[in-house]
Image (cartoon, rainbow over all chains, first blue to last red; front, side, top):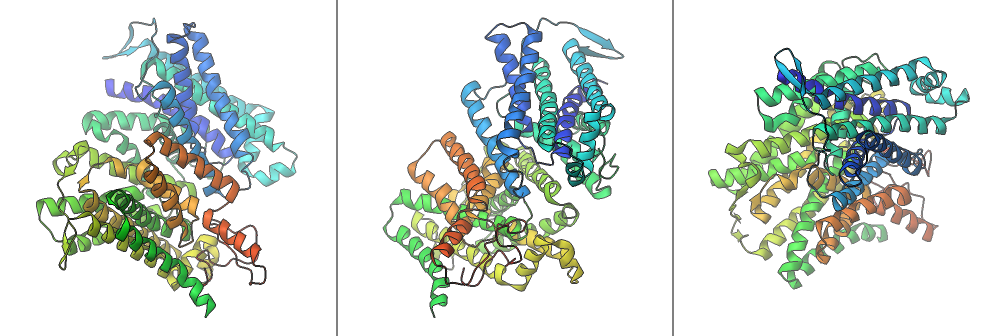
Length: 284
Length: 344
């Protein structure tokens, strides 16, 4: 039971990050390997604001999420948009270079040790035979709310419809007069905002460190491969699944191989069903 | 006669630098040369998959590690000779690459990159956690350098020459592969897989072959690593220091060119090592070099130099420089394989 809950908590972070990445990946179609850096910045800014500037927790959380969002917008406007006609491998290379730059600078600023945001929250929610600390309850609840809000935005607003159109057929969307650059920015804003929020919330319960970003990005891509570039809730489910797989694998097989289980499951899924678990081929 | 000479020139130059460093260089210079040679071998392996095949193999570090750990274990526990180790490592690497390649190569582009990234992470996990065999993070020390048919490698100078000769051979293998029928078909698959299929090529077989050759070269780099450093631990084969470094070297030098990785390995591994930068500075150099090359030079140093040379000497027939991925934009309709014409 405790494994299941740990898995869900960890998984909802993956889910939040992966939903953001899915939005960016399906609409903008760039390999945004610096997505995890938004998570890292979100977490780091939150801890720094609470421990050093003594801001109230809620404000720090919001500012943390915003800083992740800003990083995403900067990447979009400064890197991906200018490079939009370059081959995918070049964009991937540039993105990896930025990951390296950000992680190097972040290590210089914050050092390599993980940090946790101190909170006044204490106690836990008793759930069946297990205990769930309140900060983790908040994490899971916030993930659900954010992902549902994103889903509602994408599926029930005119802008969301335009975004889905871009994901389906970019050329046709362009011909229909959809302002591509504006929607790239919107996609990056929402996606990176979700990542920043995930990082901010994550820092309440787990340590965030300067070099965590690339691992998070990897996990988010695994979730996308799991779920297929399909629906937003598919990514959410994929994130939970990855968290649960890692949690159970970590406790029952070996903690050292924790990262490996997700990959193994991913490769199996790729072999069995190349479009991913929930892969309704090419819709968003 | 002139074109012949031109094509021989880089080889002569490469050999001359190797001999010069070995004959006149002190221990420091030879050590730097050895490390550069390792990078040349590894990136040449990367080049086969990434440059010629368009297959972004981000897990090549795992094969590099396979070679190094294989050498360490076989020589420490079984006192195996170099030749036994060479055959064993090459066979194991090739079989592993084919077995993994068959399912993974069904995916494309980014998905392939992520799947290979997974191989790399699994490799690092195994090296860190399978303590009974790999000693985990502590690593395996005390690997003895071999004696090759009476050529004793225990001193630095012969070891340097050995690494350099293997690097020379690795570049030779890439050059041979690029000109071979097999390599040309792989380039065709990279450019347009469906078109290649419609000509009746079984494209999956070519991709698996390219992936396997790339992995075998990386594993050979691992053998040289184990003998050169005489100590094997998980870190050098992890994503950032293994696969990513090879990726950067190929991307900066120019994928799909024989000499791109060699030039970039000297620039990005040899020169910073010579100047003895801190690891942080090194990371900066990698990141900035990569950004500059991707944004400004499009496709790497060597293709850019070639474009420059072409502009300087207009009477020569035009030559399309491959970008290592996708179609070359500058010269539509002239998709010469990226290995370049024989004069390259």
